Image (cartoon, rainbow, N blue to C red; front, side, top):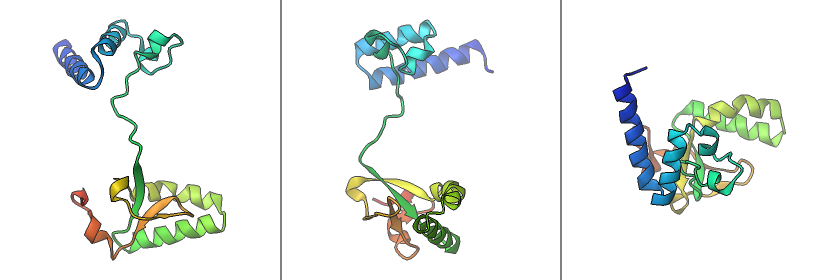
Length: 143
């Protein structure tokens, strides 16, 4: 691990980010929790109301986003067809086996930019022909 100075720098940067995302009162409560190493409270596991106020969530839940399966090549197309087939035949072992590969091809898109969602999969599907107009493998989703 780095030096104490480096650790202080990280804590300072963390707290600065925290202040930007929370109210001053809540920021003070969170700073106290950090100083006292109240990690359960920082995770929001405290039982008292004041402990729950110390909860930190630097990555905000972003509702209003729609998952899109993006095809960029033949293997993506084959995977999509296998996934659909496994769902249709209720082959849950195959669905679980494919889950990781499918998730690597999913991009979350703001609802205002979303395409129609496939009811069977719960995903919007962007086939290989449409993908270049909405998605770049270098920069991501095109707005």
